[in-house]
Image 1 (cartoon, rainbow, N blue to C red):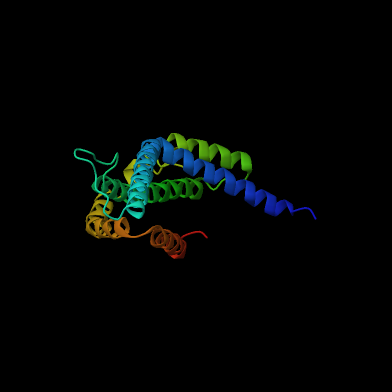
Image 2 (cartoon, one colour):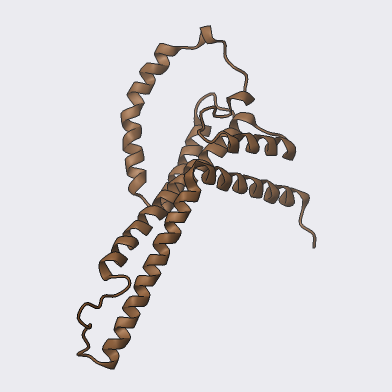
Length: 198
């Protein structure tokens, strides 16, 4: 039984978006973060091997002691340190992936591509906007500068910024599941705002 064209289209769209998220993550420092994760994982695994070797020695001889001057290749404290680093790097990766996903979704919501070709163009532009400075502004009409309410926007930003710091602090210490749930509710709240097109 062949899959429906709609399902095939949705899966292709999802794949394009996931690839764009990973590309943007990599371009925004993800490659270095992944390298740090790999290094920490290798050291944690090496520390585990050292503990297993110590355990085998103790099973063979419960009174076993290290020779004078002998130390394991990876000490217990080094293993603990790298395990903490690994947990921190993994948390940073989840946050960075979430941010990349949000930036990609923002680009799609702004441009509202109607075809797969349009979607590819939007995703390519979003991935190239590594600093997210443009926020895909080239894809939407510019409001006339003289009509922009600078003072109102500045006052609103000053009221919101301290609360946003609290939000980022709370999310930074939360796990991936909480961050994804928050992103879901944030997106839903955006669509429920008065005047927001669904």
